[in-house]
Image (cartoon, rainbow over all chains, first blue to last red; front, side, top):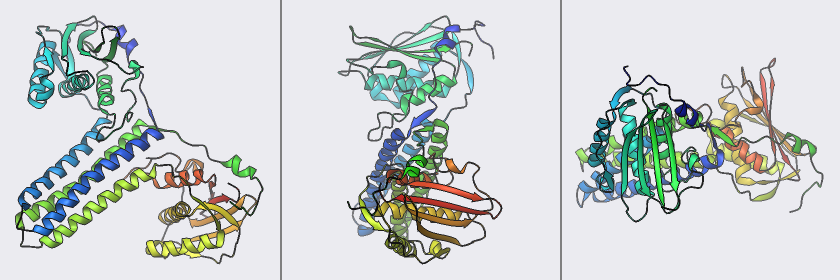
Length: 241
Length: 241
């Protein structure tokens, strides 16, 4: 693969995140309790629909109930797929990706798949041609999740800015958001899976982002300006991973 | 609570098992992959049944398909309930339980709920009146699971023997089985959850037994006689937990 820069990037190596290999049984417990609760909730809803179909047979709104059943099955399958994918170490399929193209692809993807998120984002103009080899699917997934995260954790429907710049190691992506508060230990944020489990959320989003970034030998960092209430999320993809 | 013996039981304390607090992300991964696969398999089967009902409506064997759908929902809910219960630390509700009564109750329970298992077990005569306070539901569950385990891991449909005797600490339950082989590190068997994940099995059975036994401040031990190919599983419930 042809790279634009043959430099090694010492700061990338130094900053490479330590990797959590273990999950406490307590976290596993609360996660499984929540997951079990959510799946059984879905199943209860299906049970009601099945009973409805059973009572009405060809009358009533059976057609709509059957469509809802199909949806419930699809929804349940997606939930489980998301959960199992979150903890899988992805195999990367690198392609050399100029930053400006990845930027455009990210914008298109968010506009298409997450219109509500797209409305919150302030896109700049990106003309950076620096190439960082990435797995396109996974890099886009990670950046989208970081944007989603920024939108979810910023206050008052405030805008989320995204920009890209060249840096010594390669390409730095920066997401800027308004944040009244943020986790006390930002360096550890999302390192541990299954923290902050709640209905249909299992603390796996940022954990997966970290795994994708780690697989890329890229870095993820957060910088909080408590005075200005600004949180910056930075990802550096190396030109020479 | 009145106890039959005021003795402390030093060997119980000494043997009290060390407790695994962490699960590796790798084990979590393979577990979630399997669980996700199993749940989606169930959902696929439901999808086919829903499509069948949709096509046939009032004709065909719709009644039977709907019954199968109910069963599938129940089965899926039970799976998730079992999974989440496996890792929950139970709150104990102690009652003073004479050994002979617990022995009879165990026999009745296995005969009623697990007839196939019951057919493998050689019950002796138990007249031991020693009282060990236990949570009846959980103690019966743990002993049943150990019998199930012994039957599953013994060869040639060989019989499984169970007996009870008094010991210094309280009451010792011993399950004897034929075993051509057994895990190399018997002391660690089942300590770690999510090991040996396979279709619809997540390595949680013995793990839960250990948690129940730990909550009772009881002990669990395995002794293997490689010459005679006999494996003994011993549980000691203290008379003074």
